Length: 204
Image (cartoon, rainbow, N blue to C red; front, side, top):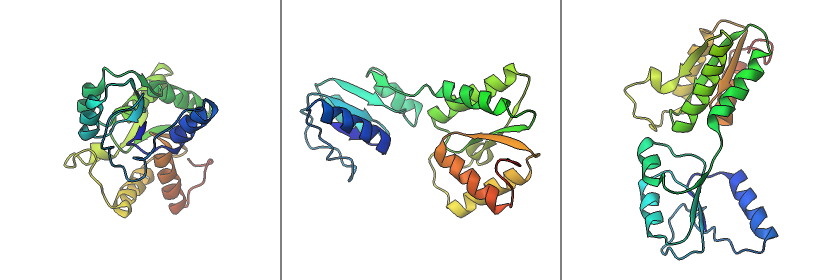
């Protein structure tokens, strides 16, 4: 059973490729509607977990369970910590990003944090810590840090969110080198940078 509650086509493709090469049968019925199966009788479950109802469903399964990707909250992480996991080393992602940007010389460094999830925080820590070891600091462009009235996960209209990001970039001394928590946020940065008439990579 492939229980991808956090859609990720690369994970889906990787699992499907392995299954095809090893002549396994893969149940992917829950991927598109996002609904949990009515039964829990499988030989094994590969899963991502983003809500408590998935935690409850996994508890009914008597087969081996392996989780992938991270979880959105400490509560969910605590509830499923006993399952083995295959996961990205998010801290090292931040370290590698910082090392790459440090090669650019002496720009203003910044980290764009949008979700506040555990994975984003780990990437940010790796980035900031690595810069510190090289005597540099990073400005945090932190959406929830600037919006403490919002609960993490709250949706804000994209136009309003990008307007906030536009003001943060306007205030950033140039040239700047920015790491985002993931590719989706990097694309948001690219959109706003171009809207501001700035150049990539000359300005940011």
